[in-house]
Image 1: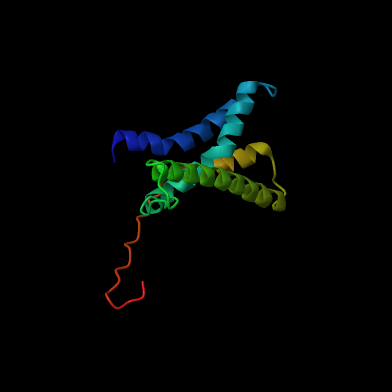
Image 2: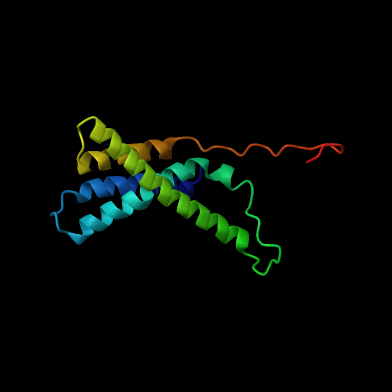
Length: 142
């Protein structure tokens, strides 16, 4: 793993720990709100999407029949990963909050701490590899 890959991999957990540190700021601080909102919106999902990123990049997006845009595959894949990161973050936040509500232990700080720990754990997980594409013989329908 190169140092650049390590830095990219550790950005989401760093954002979570930074959001936890921002809780020490006064309640109405815009910096506190921005740090927490940005982490909750993208952090956990970015770490989770990072785990399955190599497997997702194995098969590029297929563009429209008329290929007017040569960079469609790259931008489409980037947009797909970004939207998946946002939706996975929102889902993880809802799941953690629901579990804490059911356990009668809900608080904003506990949700943020649990998501930060989940993000840190996901950042240390090994990346999934793409499964090889199935090879079809001459007589097979595919």
